Length: 107
Image (cartoon, rainbow, N blue to C red; front, top):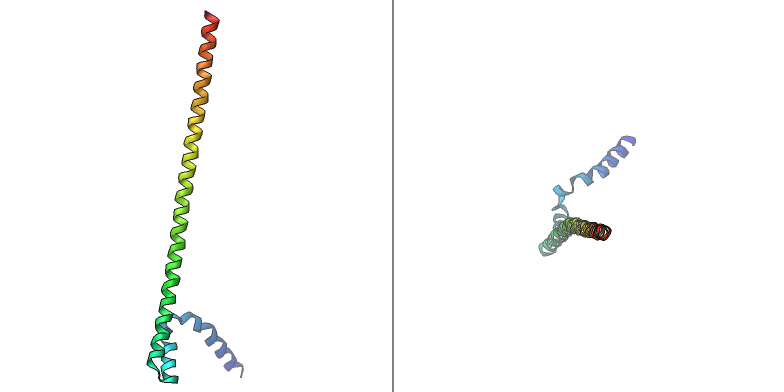
């Protein structure tokens, strides 16, 4: 009894590892149970459509992350350029004020 319980537990755990290999298992069971090939085809095709939709959503999320990273880098670069221009402007103002002050002192 204990051995059967362990085997059953292992089967239940390991069935999740073989999901890609059993993609046709559901529709084939539908055909065997009901005999309706159209229903099995619909079941298989709808499963494939959902799988493709999940993959495309995953790709969209990945590309969205990449776009946000590029925008963030561009924003940082723009802010750095603005800061550099501001610092240069302030330094130029200090330079010209010093020159004017020196000219007043010597005249």
